[in-house]
Image (tube, rainbow, N blue to C red; front, side, top):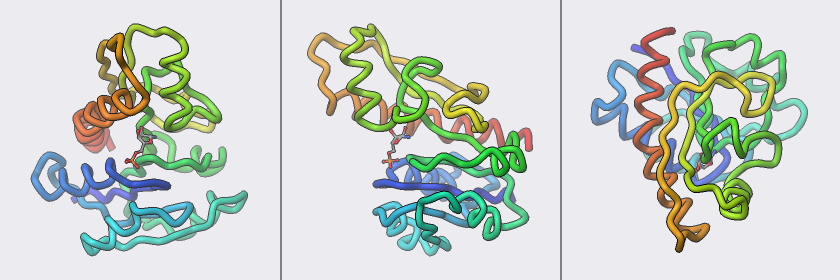
Length: 188
Ligand code: GRF
């Protein structure tokens, strides 16, 4: 049985997808053993609802070292699911190849510091890009720069809005996140 720690900052719909995937067999032989948030958020409630241990570590410069202290030793994979803090170099290096993130665009475009949530969708719409999508990638100390594991795209329609874009991306995320998690769990 593989142990997953999920890091969250927001509503946690991707966390929910992972929990459901573990429960319905989409993510076999794995369990979410810990959820850590860097701020109060609904994702913590989702973990609580499923009896999953959940901890809040306030965001700030000590976040990575505090996280390093509490993360279970048997953790096979750390999944960033709508997580907004930036993990420091030391943390990223000590869990190299074991941390993945989901990003709501087609990296390497529309990534980097400040590119999260609606900021990404706004930039994509303003750019006149013909397509968008979601990317699951390894986390390294360079923000959104790690190796891409899985990516899926769709065509942007002429009538696309921030809301419709975000909805389409979430759908894609729910599809590719469990697949990417399985593929990484098979390697670790
Ligand atoms: C997702 O779109 C993810 O790509 C991004 O933040 C959003 C989180 O949504 N990193 P949720 O909290 O999983 O609902």
